[in-house]
Amino acid sequence: MKHWKRLLALLLSGAMALSLLACSPSANPTGGDPTAYPDGVPAPSAPASADPSGQPSASPAIEADLTQAPLEFSAGVNPEDVMLTINGEDVPADRFFYLLGQACLRTEQYFAYFGMSLADTPDAAADLLEQGVQLSVYHTLMRQKAAELGCLPTDAQMEEVRQAMDEAGLDTAGPYWGLTEDGTRFIFEMTPYYENVLDAVTHDPDGQELSEYLDSLKVYRVKHILLKTVDDSRQPLPEDQTAEKKAQAEDLLSQLQGLSADELHTKFDELMMAHSEDNPQNNPDGYTAASGEMVAPFEEASLALKEGEISGIVESEFGYHIILRLPLTDETKAEYQNQFRVDALEDMAAQWIEDADVTRADALGELNAIDFFFRLSAYQKALAEKDAGESGGEG
Image 1: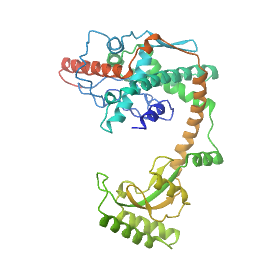
Image 2 (image 1 turned 90 degrees about the horizontal axis):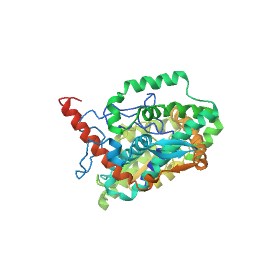
Image 3 (image 1 turned 45 degrees about the vertical axis):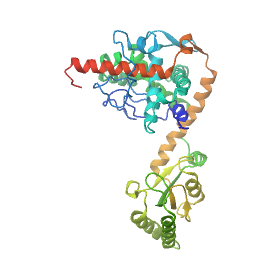
Image 4 (image 1 turned 30 degrees about the horizontal axis):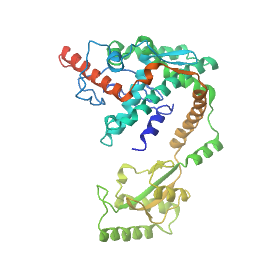
């Protein structure tokens, strides 16, 4: 589970156009949707049923008291209570706890892939709380920088925000998150503030800058033929089967050697589709990866190749690979061109955060982020069940 702290850090990044489900199957923001947020924090929405998609299971020991407001029950605060003061600007509880809740939700969803839960990792509470603080500081500073740089949202951008808020059904979303109208507006306005600051302080890289940036990240694209030496549960195959796989790999490699460039690509695809045990039909154009994303022997061999070259037989924990390095696609270059700008802003934002004057309310020192999250989840589930019952079970 070594990557979960990295995941939390990524939530700060303006690059993260993640489609998180706040509570509802209908809440599925995308990069072009005015309700989608570049750091992965979606617009608020209410559950569509008593068992909302993407919603973690609350502990059965938590019995929600719906006579209390959501933040009163989950954190013992009122929506208007000040949690942070950033360069003299107050951050009220509704805004802070929405951002903290999203950090917790994203991490809970990540843990679910490993059959785990935040309930299994109580030591994560302090880091999650810090993530809520950092998200609040980050987005408050974006607004402050927009004012300082003279790049406040335009009338057209604010009209998009108003339309998105009208379409979101905030009269039903608010009770699930404890959001006030001002808090909801802040959440919906994060995208235009972020985008305007991004445009104001960064530039598109020229060809050399982009090339150097891609090299610094060790971005590469490859196809490979894999002959597995492990079974589906990643247990080693018997020695005789492993020896057969190696002999097969040597035979395939011999068929690829000495071919012209065009012949090599055609033959490689033919052999890959016929023999690779990595479901090549799912990735006929190969893999694009950056440093650290693939197992070390595979990455090292890929980076050692020039475009158009094939490797020898590369052994990894999965089996024997034959790798063909390919040029990066224009689509990939365009994606990294935008990432270049995002990373430039994130470097500046890190300094802004370090320089910011941040005061924390005493209540934060007593808050357990995981307890808050599961109490809020229990409250939202109970409220969804109540609403479903009152509407005859219709979503």
